[in-house]
Length: 157
Image (cartoon, rainbow, N blue to C red; front, side, top):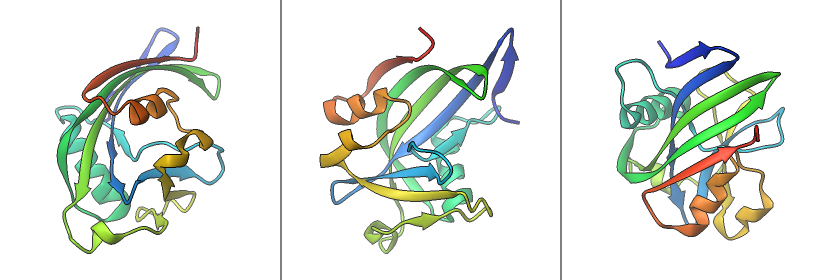
């Protein structure tokens, strides 16, 4: 069961995502029906830590095994989506593919769960300001390069 709870007029989410970088490009996922990108990952399940979450999510979504190489950030994320307010706690892990062949991937990947609207794209870190990445504080985290860090992204203020 995902750690998603309805609390008063908010939805409380606990999520984890992974930052994978190859050749100065970062792996992101994008819903082809939306205008923004985000780091791949998903909701933490009850009794699961954030490292296990990102490993499970990448295995489910891409069919790839990753290893965790460090901890990047915790983000307190407040936003509205489809008329609902969210209070989200987001853990960002640094990861890498386990298989040597997977470390050479530089092309767009597709979702293995049948979610054809999701694709996984590599964005050039030197042009990161040109992309709409959510939560918006992720760009600052990436450019600061001081880890681990804590950030607050409040789009409800």
